[in-house]
Length: 501
Image (cartoon, rainbow, N blue to C red):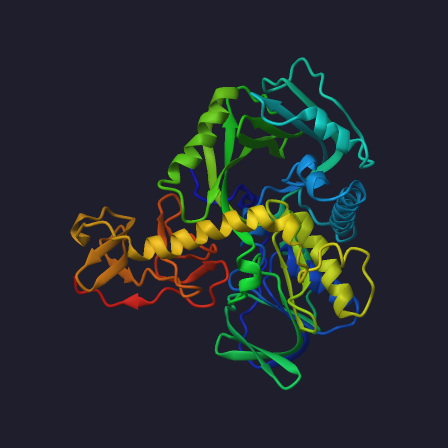
């Protein structure tokens, strides 16, 4: 079993150097996932000089941990969208997503990117009152999408009602992003890996991005980092950070189903499909979501996926396991565009679990805005919009949760255990007379002690047992066992404490 995304099965042998000098560009893009690389593609085509700054490796962050699904629908049901917006707006959302998928397909064809792109039907079904199919179809009938009622007799899951939407797609998002990066790289479109941004400051009419003890001078900065870096309270307080898990499974009977399956089983939702060559297929199952840093034992979330797959399929072995992160917007639509009116910083966030498509859409919207071109979707997804009525209930829920974690966890004692009691490859919050520590012991018995206070806004991190990370329950920042930033708005890592316990 490999604790890594299934997409690594077909990673490209591509690498880029880290930033090792001062440079000046028109646009600095922070993040080398599908959003950042596609933004660089558009801006480069518009004749602008671009630099992409990726903290790790291109495509291996959120993009390489995603589902690989390309669909017109969203994580939120059509009923939910219709309850907040009119039919014309729902139609526009669907059309925008269709156009983004078309751009991905065009890129794959134009550059001959071998990313296992495949057209698939998408099955939506419910069991145990999972969703109201009749109401969903009523809205679906106005979207222009081709669909039909689900009448399959030999369907791979038990269901009570459902429908199928034709001409959706799937692909390997890591392979696609890596290959696209290679295609667009040039003297005027540079890409830097292992380049961690530590600060962004204004200097005269420019923005200075500090990274790797160097600086990038730019007229514009794009936060293509899944959630904006730094302290942007107006966005972080309207986003709910969640983690979801995936497994890649081998079946005994080679009975792999064709299609993208979204099953609603009461309050649980699972996404299932087949991926890989006919000679080497895998069954992928994704789901079991929870708020970042708030699962008591998230190995149980992965176990839930395993139990679900074993219940419905003849499983031989589970080969891949991984987790991915998403940020849910308060009013169900992503925030795309200028950070605020007049700003030269642009953000793209709140994609929920629809980031591959929304990331591509965001790249087009932001690139058009920077180039001075009118984009028909700019206003709909405007980052600085304020829709209190549409966002009120979710905004209140998310922030009550954040305040509870910020205040409650700060005063909560760590586990009253000594370091000697830690198991190999285990982390815990340990309480001593002089304070609380985030302590990790590796397989060799070596101990790393960190401050448990997230540098973003002061919340206390919790141990992620399944992925061996320290996760902030407030705004989703995640740190490795050495305290380095993996994910989220935090610009700096957890402070290392010299351990004398």
